[in-house]
Length: 132
Image 1 (tube, rainbow, N blue to C red):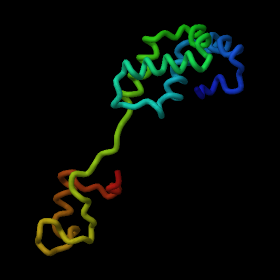
Image 2: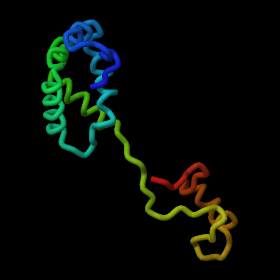
Image 3: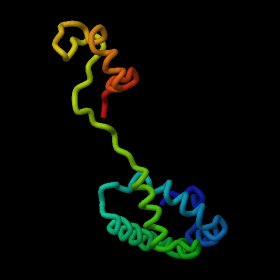
C-alpha cells in the first residue's frame, strides 16, 4: 500500500500516524492509492473481501484499526473508486478524415460534402483522434 503519509514509516509507527492524520484523510489517500488497481466490473463483495485480506496479510491491520477504518469504510472507498472509473468510448463507425472521400457516396471530399452537417450533429470533432 503506497499511502504517501506512511512512506518511510515503520509498521510500529504507522498506527500513531494514522491516528494523527484522521480517518477522512486516511480514506482519501487510501482511495488514491487503490484507484489504479480496482476493477469496475468485479463484484464489490469480492473486492472488499480481497482488500480486507490484503490489509491483514500486509501487517497493517493495527494501522487501519487505529484510524477507525471498518469494513464498511473500505466498501465505501471501493464503491467510490468504481463509480468514478471511466472507460474509453468505442467508435461504432470508422473515423472519416477531412480529405477522405465522403462516405455518402457523392464522390466529393468529406470536408466539402458532409463535414459541416456532421459537425452540427456533433458527430465530428476536430480534436477527436479516433483512438480507443
